[in-house]
Length: 261
Image 1 (cartoon, rainbow, N blue to C red):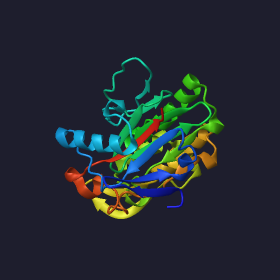
Image 2: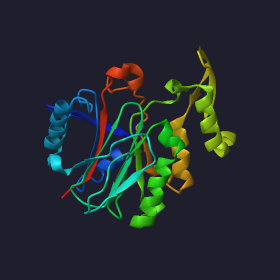
Image 3: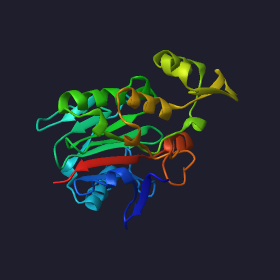
Image 4: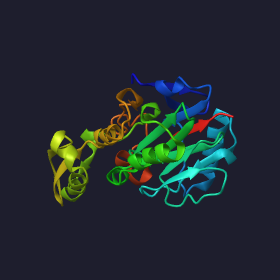
């Protein structure tokens, strides 16, 4: 875990990226471990309690929290002063202070993004569907177009997520990836066939992390600013929640990023 640091308080344990800690005077960020029990929507009381713990830990108000109603879309919302709809929202961007952008994941990728020159943050949730819809590229386009961010200044951190060895898919999903990322497929070893089969036939491993890194590089994000936690949620199931491990009993890991007052 060379790119991250694990910290622990009385109520919460969380991961931080060493690269973003260079800006800790102006930025709060964290990715929670499973010792922090973030309840799902069906347990509203537990969710409210969890959000209060999160807010108290990092010294902001629960009213500062902004979280999209994640539905594996490519919808990215800009948080300014006006009210916005967060329905079917998997990405959040803001240049405002004291806006705590949250995403909930349990195998999907959480991207924590910061431009220290233009002081813009983003928090992007990308499962395999979000990856095939290129949500991370859409977010970067918006940073460049709407906030005048420069490619060379954007820092993009990749949280713990399901890695290639455990991301097993059937032929139908494989074909979606092959069709969307045909150029990548010709140049890189992105998928491999396994010895495993189910009722739908053979299964394949796909490297969604590599695909997202290639999409970032395609837009000019420089290598040193693509910071990977290099953590697999399934391999580290003792530390992080994984949907593929816990199934319907899973809970969420929380990715947080906020500009300080």
